Length: 205
Ligand code: ATP
Image (cartoon, rainbow, N blue to C red; front, top):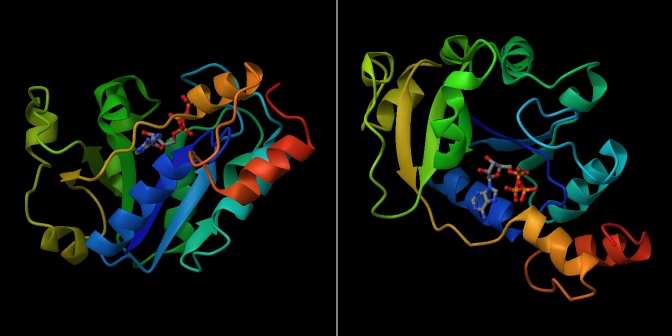
């Protein structure tokens, strides 16, 4: 089973890394692919360049051999639609279960994503929740795909919806950027190697 984390990673921080590590262990994933988006369709555009975000991501995951910095969205022209990314991953991994992870905030906007229903053709969707989280009411489309049996994610390659609670650290890339812009120290919110490179390149000031 392969895990997929999309995001802007502007920059990568311990919130991303802790969640990725927990799901790797919970689902016994062979690898977790972190995929920075070139032009995210749903949000303001990133501050750091694509090449720099990828570089910071690689520094952030360098101690975790099962984490992979996947640059396929950066190589693709135009907007970074998840459906194109999953289609391309499915070609690379034709026989593996693909688990697309997203926070509950992202899941709540899923119905606005381009070709969102087709995402389930290529992958399972695993929504990362806080302990005690209560989901919004799920419509028939989601109810038909919902499972509470993690074994089903292994037995089928795609098509299921699963909710998984993980430790969520209250860390965001935007808060880190704001701290830097205010001349404050975001130490211990992100790996030292990443922060050192941010400082050397005077990013987010
Ligand atoms: P920004 O603050 O710029 O919006 P962000 O910190 O939310 O950025 P993204 O790169 O947009 O980070 O998020 C990538 C993915 O990581 C998303 O699926 C998001 O839900 C998840 N994520 C972000 N922060 C955390 C966190 N603290 N804990 C768990 N997951 C997180």
